[in-house]
Length: 232
Image (cartoon, rainbow, N blue to C red):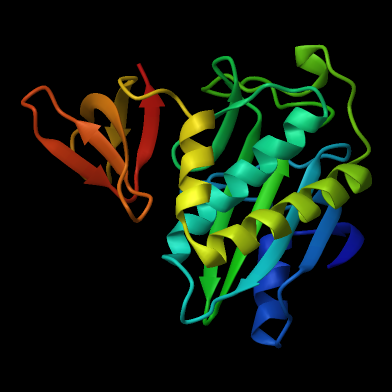
């Protein structure tokens, strides 16, 4: 495991995609004290002032690995484990957002470059943005001390390495832990898909590839592989 820290960059994910194209190996992490062009899923901006965690790592895919998309589950359970060690009690919303109550605490973004997947993780360790169209929070807002980002990342990198090893043996243990920490089966969800009306139904677990199973009012089960999910 190697952790590099820079004072400022546009995006740790963008930097790591470049490093991946140059042969960077598993276990490398890049942390920025501040990002000037951080981004989340679906091209959303990620506000990135100093004090929070902005970090990315590389996973080199092997032929025997599970579906690469399920690395989202790996990142979520590793981050959940780390946050709990610091006193937080988050829950996971599919596929990899961590919430406290109804407010979002973290963001995870996976991007593919050849045989490498870059996993970017942002955590509101010290503060959170105001005036967004959705509730967000930070550890101090929940009555918890803001940890040092370097120490937090060291713990997170170790947890990620453990869960990555388990994932490479079988998705089953990762899937079980994810389900333990996620919104319970039967939770009412709304799923927004590109260029389609929202789907509403009840959470019915994960399929064998980590897809979200949504039980519609008709009784039909739909499997969602990409989309914005909201609890209702």
